[in-house]
Amino acid sequence: MRYKWNKIIAVMVYAGVLFLCAGCGKKEAPEVPSTRSSTLFEIFRLMDTRQYRAALPLVEKYQSLEPANEFLSELRTLVCTNIAIQEAEALAQKGKLKEACAVLDKCIRDYGELPGILEAKQIYQNLLELGTRIQILREPSNSGEMLKHARWLAGYAARFRNVPLQNYARQKIRESGEVRKLEVDRAGFLIYADAMEQLQQNDFSGALALTALLAAERRYPVPVARIQNGGLYDSPAGKKLEKK
Image (cartoon, rainbow, N blue to C red; front, side, top):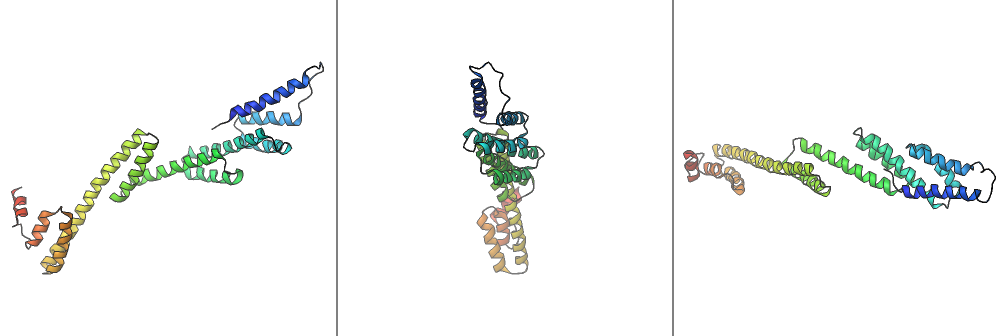
């Protein structure tokens, strides 16, 4: 990620104009570049080859000679930002997103809260959370957890207009509904089994309490009718079941 190259070009043009002006009106051979000019061009050479860590001490050395120079301040910001992004990107390409975030945190401590580094950190944090939630959705979980992570994924995909990710999120939202039905059915069966056991032990109060739980779901007419009729299918709901 490189940015503000127009200002760096302006620095180069400015330096070039100084050299040209120095030779105007004189027929003498141009002087050997000063230490400062040599340092500046070495900085540009290192940046062109993406050797940002090597360029940083030269920038800071040059900046110590002209601490009020705005271009040098921007140049340092650019170099520090590229150091952070370059090192984080190298780790991210290996799938080491946590390590990439740690590198960016260290760069923030070392170089300050530079906008480019903060933006990169936010991007990698989003990618890290995205990977975590997708991994959770790939593993068995209850319907509530599945729905929560699928909805987050749907919002993320919509924000970045990622159609495949949106489709995956919709699929997981539908699956969470199916899991919810299975969870309710399983819970209902367990309650029904307990109620039948209470009924067989002549614990009618316990059986009625469990029957009330089943009735509250309004999804178990036949089991409820069977419990209420001593375990027999002689209720209207039971007869309908027998016809099937």
